[in-house]
Length: 272
Image 1: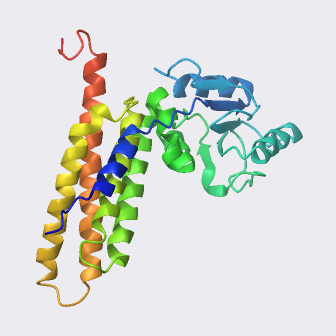
Image 2: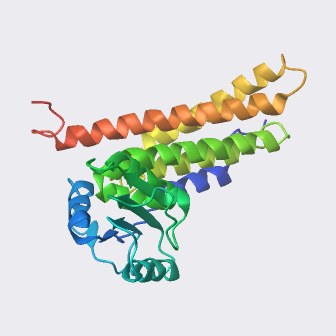
């Protein structure tokens, strides 16, 4: 009888748990000086030193958040062009009396956050845009920038849930999708750990064991349901893979977030 978890799969788990893709690059806030200073302060609350940088130079940045409080000038266009040339992702924040249909050079329309007159910066919306632009690469930055942890965690869980839904839908040999599904779940778990400051996989080993067990359980559920579904089995497998991966990710986010809160409370894990 073949083992459900092969030595090769175990080795892949070990490699994923041992990965530590530390990326020291900061988030850079540039553009309108006064507005940029306010946004930098709001984004950087509780951040590690050096996680947020103020200037228009995109080199060495993970992402550039560029603030405009007026129609873009030649200087603004040069700064944005410089970021695009350096292949640095850009999120533009447009505030003040700027045309609603304004098209910014070198910035995708979906990467523009607009701020109404007299409104404060929508920090959650800006953080969500940053997470969408950086995707999985945002984990290291989010570990140093608390405002990004929620949006980046959601993006990671959503991304890996969709990947597993696709894998389950296109692999037709029974059981052949298990290694790919489980490795994706471990990769998701490791990245969520990095978001919440877990630099190595040791702290994530309990979740990894649960993930493997959950994968085997989901496989059993899928097989049982397929016995009752004469057609469209691929849709059933895809739905189970998506919902199962998402549930595992959300549970990990909850546990990791609570651990971080407990560690930062007075007295360590003991609540005051």
